Image (cartoon, rainbow, N blue to C red; front, side):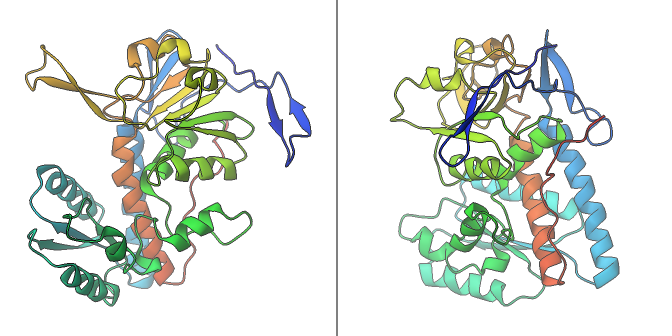
Length: 347
């Protein structure tokens, strides 16, 4: 079984060096996600996001029922949709179906593209005042005549289910401060995938590809808070492959189909592929297939564990949206939020 070797600089000024740090082999957690790992190549396990997301949904459903029974509070999720974009409408239907399945109260606010910015703001203010709504999500993108930032700023911090408000992001980044009420869904999903697949983060060398406010920067802060040594790479990074080759864990979120090649990867690394890209295909009836930012067939020859596309990070985003909604409902009832799993389960 492959093991990680690590040489990183730690401390505020990098005063000490850890060398030859051995990583415990990646294993499946029978008690958490019994079908979340399977061999996809010799020495490489597939991290099954669908299975892990299903486990989280099951937990959220049970915890929501407990909350309703003990406090009378039923978690409520409101989704605001503008226009009739096929992709946005599909995402909203998926979110509503998921909310219904776990027993949430759900509210749909649909507008045509002619809606004014002020009308959207009034809708959000109404949802802010609705005690049955604990999480508010505005499906993006919005039409060009609407200032997205201004609309999103209207969402109360304690109903910011996406976790993108300045207050929630600030609390996530501050060491020793109070925890955010909600954590951005996709970054939180990446962390849950690692933790529930029994992959150690503490002390590891992590490379995050991409610095977006939606994935790259939040996931980097989350992993730093878990004592990983994190390097964030972006379009201006010089010699990107050399950075990736040092990583024990690679988080790819750059939106560039199969950009990361197998020879970029350190033997035995873990790959979390956030990217979803379409690639022309003459064999698929749709004329295309979905691929990640990492060349999957090449990566499985090097990695010890990897997420597929589709079926990896994608299902986790909605699962974490549900968990955030539950946490905001718990907050409204004066209860503590349910944290991300902080340490892997050991056998």
